[in-house]
Length: 262
Image (cartoon, rainbow, N blue to C red; front, side, top):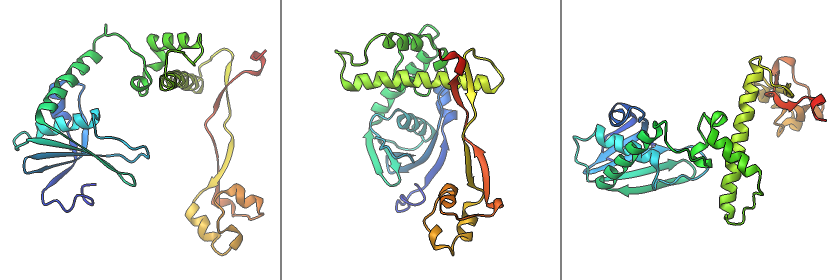
């Protein structure tokens, strides 16, 4: 981002800025690395590169605000009267939000309070699709389990909920179920036993050992010009040397044992 799209700015820029040393002084659990930080006049610019296809907004973006807080502490010797937050997504564009040092100071207090609350063993648990998405405790969280169990007792078309709320609930229960299944697979792969369940071997797949080399080998065959997979080649009766192909298996599938289905 910095070396190409921002090269016209007549100012130094800092790439991959480690902000953990300054953020951890606010709270031991805080940290992060900003993709690019710039300072122009009295303006601090903090840029985060996103490579996903879903547009991300810079407005009220907690991650970007945290980077901005860290950058303001790291470069506090420079004059900063405004902060510009930028989300840059190749192929999509950019989202820009401007905030003041006062707004950043308000965010700092909120962030520290949140970090302290996250470490409170007596904090109230509030399961939700957004806050539980990346949590590694999904499989052992009693609050999430109870929520999933309660939702399983009622129809998902809850009359007092909007469709968005119902979808959020469905996503939450789905994430919990996926986490349980992933944990069960890990248990069985490592040699553990789960009564009534087993792993089914993944399906056999034939892949290119070196796709570039195979494409070069097939370059003179007009029938293979648009062919992409070994399976498509086989259907056309086009044979590749054995050393061009390798056999792999997809990951195993968690299934009920046949004699436990009745």
